[in-house]
Length: 314
Image (tube, rainbow, N blue to C red; front, top):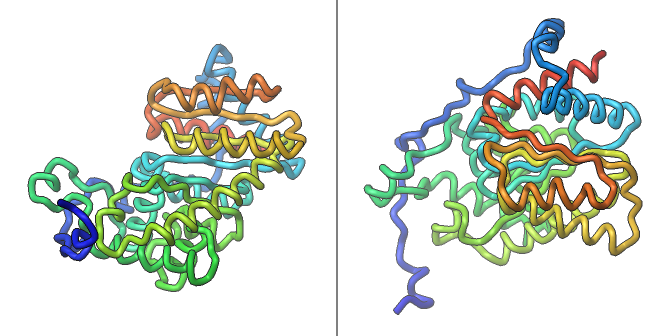
């Protein structure tokens, strides 16, 4: 019968250096030097249905940022696995993005890219070998960072960013966590215990992870309370971030926060219940302007980011 002795049993560990990974930092997208070419692309996007919505959202965000209003990105792991770490990092450094919220898997993929330049293991092969999720370096990094949540009263996002900085991560330009940390914007990590590979290891400390993630939730709630006139985008989080956003929105409303004419948008590959309801429908009922775009991230997001930057520099 499993019990307290179960934790003492050593888990099989593998080195990330030898682990087969499907994504490398060399595959990541990069921003071009300028966006003069976007006018040609814009002529090919009809001002109809989602084509019209895409331009409308980009202009709303550009106007909000010109007025000093926030732009917050919530994201799931697929954003990193599709190679957008450099582009989002660049948007952070350009002061376009003012806040980041991610789930635990997104943080783990970002850390692996920053530290080792590779991520996204072959799950089926790993399961057969008994090695899925058992990269020792990844778990050690996460355990060391999460310990800061207890020892230094840090949120999990801040702790992970500090760990990347102190270890001089080799690929900081491709890391969202590194960009947010060095730019001093709020970066929060929202964890569901048992959903991430680092929880499989003996060193995972539920007290540290839980305290850090709860602190991050309170930070995120304060970010949402200051949303007035700004925008929140959910990119690829099907459950965790839409639920976190809903609760943060509820806290803001209960405290009488004036959210003003805020904007939300959901970007995903499929129409799913929680993002559609919590990010689109319910905010619209509160007076927000909301959008939903469906499509493969690796094709849809470059068009949106290009549209946004073209409008920012118009």
